[in-house]
Length: 247
Image (cartoon, rainbow, N blue to C red; front, side):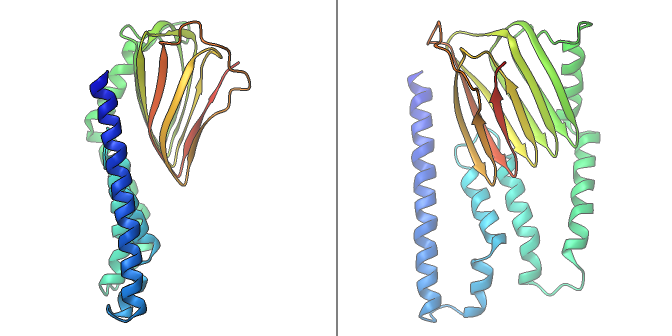
């Protein structure tokens, strides 16, 4: 437990240092442009929304369990920055979305995660319309799709949910929370997650949001009978997010 806490503290300090360094660097560059130390022609490139996406992607890679969202931000920013750096005779905006769809389609057809996702769901199917996770972990990947799942009669220990242009609704009201710290990793890119949990669960949200968010919207939160049981929700929300509810 001490190692995990120390690791989180180190990650937080590293992210804080990186963000501070970026802010200082932006100030120095702005001074350089104002005093014409650097060519003014570079200013609209360095201080652009494309460069902002690249910087946010780099910062999000630090201390992350999953690097997908950060890499995607860097690729999107770099893709749209290319026409500013080079004189192309084609419209990048017209080819961006088709290329993105092709990449996602190829990842669905040949990606390991997609095949694992289907094997996982075949293992979880049950005739009552619910899901019984023998080991207590959930794994979901939704790409241009959605899912609705009910976890019953199990001791929930966490897992990972990834949504890219998709959504998921997970009902945990008939599950019990395992002892200790249970981590659920959520990655949302243009997607969302709704978690329905018992009102007495202790939930800690540690989501990094970029033009998105993740909120605990339970209207009533009861006192936990066992304070040592906690669900920690980690990950990132980029142009997306999620919410926690209870009946």
